[in-house]
Image 1 (cartoon, rainbow, N blue to C red):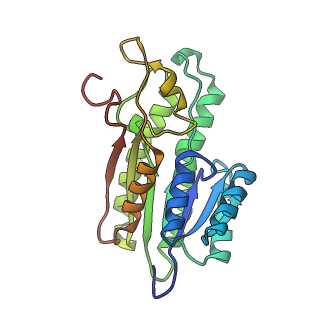
Image 2: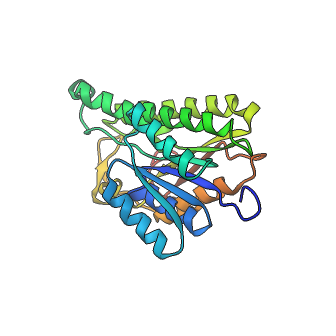
Length: 254
């Protein structure tokens, strides 16, 4: 709570499915007022309705994080309807087709960069401006970095490059936010069981050229980790967290 009887306000991007949806529900269960953002209004509305049935406070706002005007409109709604922002979870992201580098379409590259990096910057920029001027001042920003912020998969140059860039963005925001009580951390997720990761269970290319079925973990473990990061006081911060299916081929040689 930000004060006696006042709910903390959270914004989750990419809230309509997968990690975003699970994290939004977890925050709602623990008393947050959650703004649900995503490109498609219908799944956001469905999630908001589900939250309301459970007694939660959710607000669904369609937003294209790659568009500066759309992000500005989203934050106008947050100011008007909620008055402040305590937590931003930069979760929206996308990948490109798994092709050789020289075969990746330039428009696909730009779309991944626009979503995974510029979109995070636009939302962070808007949140930073609100958090440093609101009363009480400050807030928390959590970026979805992915295991790909550490190591690439085959044929993933756009996704890997943007996720490595998120690590630099996280560090810069963490540093620049200090004077304003704005903290920033990153969660790097490996093989959460979502629609996006479903192909892992069918077999996916490995660095040695083999196709391997990879283990998955329950997405609720990710939601629990987000809640843990969110619930810390602003005097403490999880700078980087890696949460992954224990037996996925990441540590060591697989």
